[in-house]
Image (tube, rainbow, N blue to C red; front, side, top):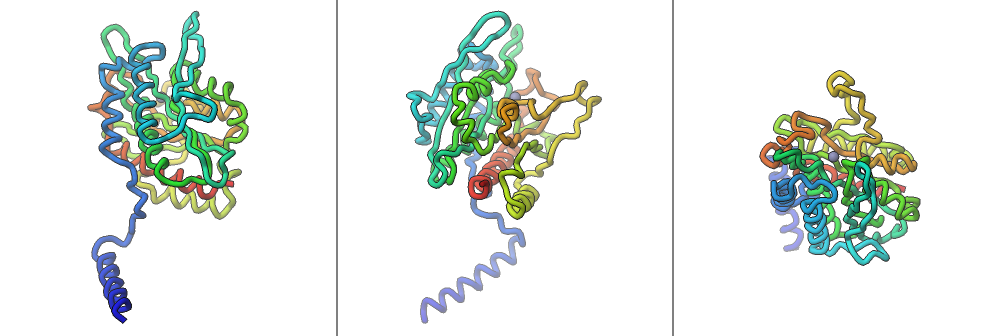
Length: 318
Ligand SMILES: [Zn+2]
């Protein structure tokens, strides 16, 4: 009797509470991403001290070590049969060969351990020209920071699929890190359901929407789940827009978004992908792409949005 009364009164309080606040109840995982840690990653990676994180520089090595330290602190594993998070590869820069380092973390799935969802974000940028430092705060300290916090959040819970957290080097040199990954781990690529790539997810103070470009996603979701995913995108923490309508005129050239970033390496092998990014803006590949000009609030909301989409995909893709 007592329990029933308590339940009754609790129900009344909850109903009144709901009515007086908002008719749209935000699910608890909506804002699962730690805003402060997110800002501190982006602050560290976009600092002048790292001198723009160009491949084969000290600042790039330091960025790779920072990411590896973070993965270790989240209890994320190294890739099976790899001793280290850092996985080196050779690439050609101008006329000579240099060594790049992808940083790779792994989380085992519960039901579909032999199938993968690969999350990627490149940590390199274009470095320095004379004494001008290109910090690449949005491109792509933003995506790396979002991916780190998503990895931390996913590490604390069960996922159906195995997740690979792929922080690529040398994206700015012809997607070399992502291409090296697909060459080194063909068996993983064969078993990959989808690559979700984050590149420039913060934008500037005028950024209003997150763009999404995808390939073969409807093959992974049945009709009813595809429509649920569409609904989820519509009520995301940020406005999500499918595709880009940046014209040849506004960009000065026609960009093929299927190969505009690391997801291109997966696309070329027929692997489904979803790419998240704000598109080019006034600070793109300029020294003004720095921490001060970054839209930190948008970065946080976009990271929450992507995290929630990932939870959905892990649960529903087949
Ligand atoms: Zn980029």
